[in-house]
Image (cartoon, rainbow over all chains, first blue to last red; front, side, top):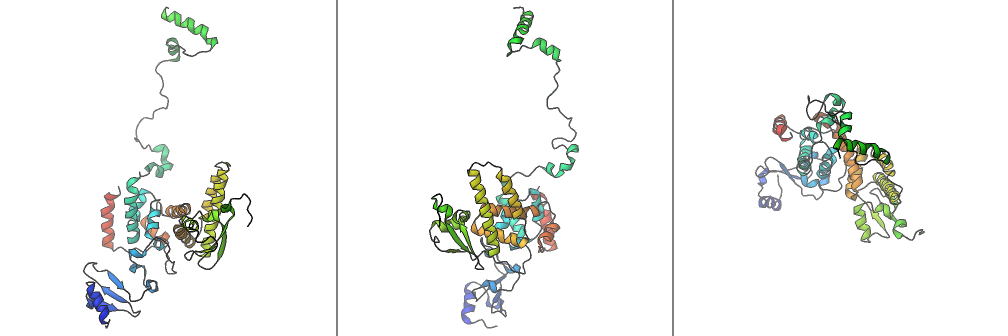
Length: 191
Length: 167
């Protein structure tokens, strides 16, 4: 596994042990770094174009998901996974609060975007009322209290209309009403 | 180039070139719907030449231009005091416009992001969000063909951890 002195020294200078390195057929170098990055594989290429890699989406690092255009490959069938993370976050900001619980379990990529959306958007927005999901049961379900007595919009007055007319005075009345109302008032007040 | 009202920007035509070398001649006011292109045009770099868009293919660019044209016309109508009646027309147009297959939708969203056309980007994102809403985990995976890359242990841990976190 001859990598050349210059390359091995480059790896050493980056703190990588050359014995953890293996070459592939495409002339790429796979480095197994078990120190800082855990068991993640770091692909160090001696070619400039990373897009020539025939690897699956698992090897894409977050830095590759930049804002802007990505080419859509034929083997990418998933619409969501073809999107850059910032656009997926934007999409997830349009879903409901309740959907976050499901989304966080879909896949690692979706979970990361969901967490970002939760911190940047949902932390500052109010969940929708649960009533909207039960719209078909509106007549049987009350959001305030299930068994509360129904209150009328206009509470019924305890004073009958006749009694009310005896004690009430019309403040603004037409000339036709003025005669009888004034007489009524003088009778009651004794003026 | 004929000038009707004397306003150069309303009749000036710009050329946009897609990644597959399709050329579209578009009114400047329509091009200005894109913040990205507005920056390029205002810097006067492309006043007489083609604006190359190597990231947008012809089929998608054609749709985007159609969207921008429609919205530019609608905005002009509102400014001409024809009322908000056209907003229903625009809404109907938008819902029909975005009713496309996944690949086209993806292309539109990516292009709208690159060209910085906020309304179109929001429209596309909302369309996808509507397909995500109120779906279970499995339904989301099926709808979008996503592979579950969690191990069973990771899944269990996430479920337990988030039982309280999202209430």
